[in-house]
Length: 122
Image 1 (tube, rainbow, N blue to C red):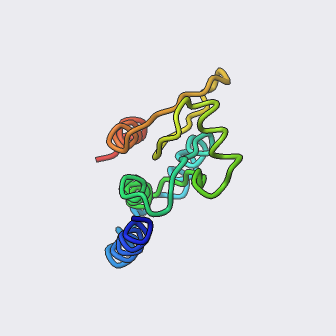
Image 2: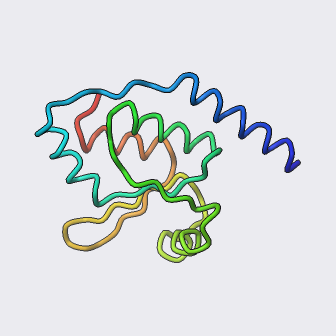
C-alpha cells in the first residue's frame, strides 16, 4: 500500500507541475497590501496530498504568498497542528487575527472559499 501511495503521489506532483496555473499580476501596491494580510497566515499541508495540491494551486493562481508548513515530515509542526488545531488533518489554514486569537480552518473547499472572500477574488 505504501508503494501505491508513493506512486500516486509522484503522479499528482508531475501533473501539478505540468499543468501549473499562471499567477495573476497585480499592481505592486495592491500585492503588498495582500502580502501584509497573508503574512499572518500559514498552510499546514502534505506535499502529495491532492487536497493540499488543490489549495496550493489556488494560492499560485491568485498570487497569495502564504507560508507552507510540512506537517508530515516535521514532527514539531505536526504536534503544533494537533495541539493547537485539534486534528492531524490537512490542508489546514492557520489565521492569526489582529486580536492575537488564532483560527484553524480545515477542508480545501472551505480554505479556498475563505481566501476568495477575504481578498475579493473571482
